[in-house]
View (cartoon, rainbow, N blue to C red):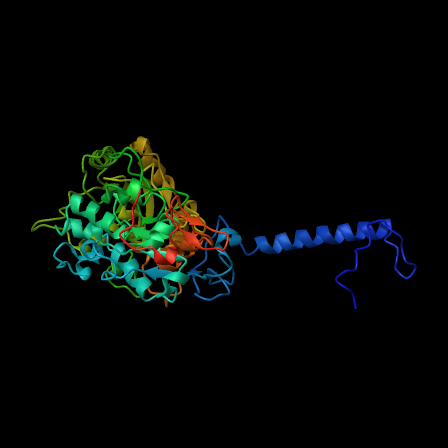
Length: 462
């Protein structure tokens, strides 16, 4: 039995006659074995990676074995680097009664706005994500063991319903943040906020001062058309899908069924308002030149002639290509809706950011065309694409569209599973900020050397 005090034999030292000599033949054989092992390991690994030219039905299985499992037996893996081999998260969800001011951000100054009202429309993700996290197996009730902290707020809905004005929203957020010791501890780096509209985090006017280090979930990656700077940071924030009508995303949805390509009336369509945007105005003019190819009807989204949801999707499904031009901001819900009526989405928004780019190759399921080249050439290009190629793109889109659906964790594939994987990459073992310090015994203190466990609100913010 060896001793811990035994010294290692020096390399090139004296050989004992009972040990075999390491000849040049042995060395060459060892090198060949290493090279062969590396080659076959790489070959095997590549055979289980998603191909750029092929998609299979995604089946996200919430187990510790695999991140994403596809139906033909291959694994569509979130990269182990930064993600880990399986989901292992603990997320604390703040309660509206726990933090003074949070209730106003969820239900308005009078507390009269019901969350079910905020669940509807393209901004419903602010409610859906909150509700899914409340039921999640990754939720923890203990702040001290949490990896991340979720701050619920239905700000866009509350503002639209007249529950808070911009000044009140700003004041409420500042008030809420000043009561969160864990936010202070990390400088907000481990806190999650949802901003579900094109305005992004700009709904909180002082976002750049208070939550510029926090994790922002938003469908909007650019707002430089109206603001000096975008609130989206590709290194810390997460692009999420917009909120598609539940009747289109749930399994067995019967709201509207796709049409066979041969029965679709138009080559392409754009269903939406012009809003004075150059790209949209060009499409409307183009439709007047080629009315048999491009449908751009003057749709009413309010008033007695308002277009119903079923009517809208019946229009949308009647073309091979669904056009998604930039509107008030770069993202558009129409991009996600296109997958559920099974037309190929064509992005005409140069600054758009898309979700889950680590696992989805958008060249296989959509087209992005320069918004500066909208004209007859554009329609000629779309017309030149064979139906078999269109069918292939639709088929691949059908297999990954579950990633746009906000379903429960019991579903094998959902937007929420994908968001959780992206959140896992944001987890830090260690938390610090400019106002966080630590001592030789491991205790965390503030600038006045008060231990973290004794921090009391309201706390000073930057």
